[in-house]
Amino acid sequence: MANCPKCGYKLRMIDIKAECPKCGVNLLYYNQQERLALDADKAEEEHIKMQPKIDRIKFAFVGTKLSIVRLISFLIPIGVMFLPLASVNVNMPWNHIDKDISILNVVMDIIMNLKFDILMDMITGSDLTRVAFIFYALSIVFILLAAVFAILNIPFDAVSCSPKGFKRNVTLSSCGIAFTVLSIVSFLVFNSQLTKVFGEIYSGSIGIGGFLVILGFAIIILVNVLIKKQNVPVKYTDVSEYVERIARRKEEIAEMEAQAALARKAYQERQEANK
Image (cartoon, rainbow, N blue to C red; front, side):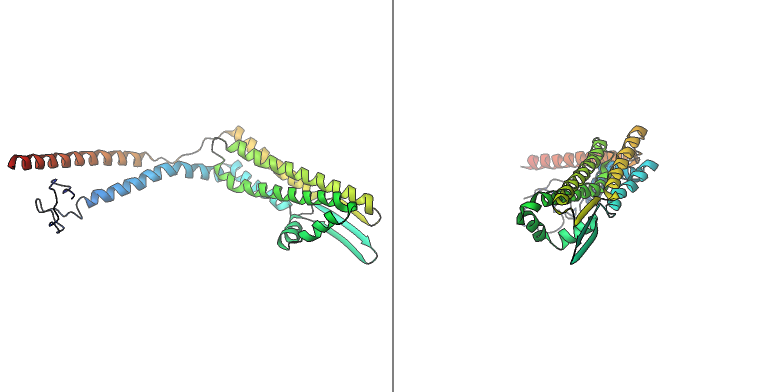
């Protein structure tokens, strides 16, 4: 059985009351305020640990004017992907196709409507179109990857003030540029291959959107470099008040525990003396 937390009396099976039979203290509510204070101390300790992280996240987003510019610049490559990335023109006696390709077309036609079968038919159906549409598929994959890196810039901005924040931000945008360039090159190969075979009825061209996407990623890298050179320190919230309060509480708790230990020791000595 347990001992009374105040006097150290060894509780027996027949001691079913809420009070200690020796000192009369309520066993359930003994030191309740101290326990609540301990819970409050734990909450404040968590606050002390979390506050610097919150300060870094806040500073990364709106800490300086350049931080705000960086946050806005993340929208540039995403927005310009909705502009024409490329265009295709097919003139046939029974049909005419004149279409601009943007990220919206790619997502709606290829992803949402699941038109993979048409693309696969063009790849596997004929030796004349196989190479061309392989590169067309690659151009789609690469621009989707560029879009992913453009979106990833936004959540990763929250950790821009971490030790590897600058390298991470530059790497994300550099990957976006690389995949956009690969998408453009793949479409040019597709366009060249298809023009060789169907030059009389087909024509295609790269739109301005792809180059603006590259420019958007380059702007993000430039802003990150300027922020790095600016080197403004993070403004941390002063939590010394909480630290001092917890230190005082720990001293008080240590003193109370020492007194309780002395009381239990005294009770045990009396018990041994009475035997």
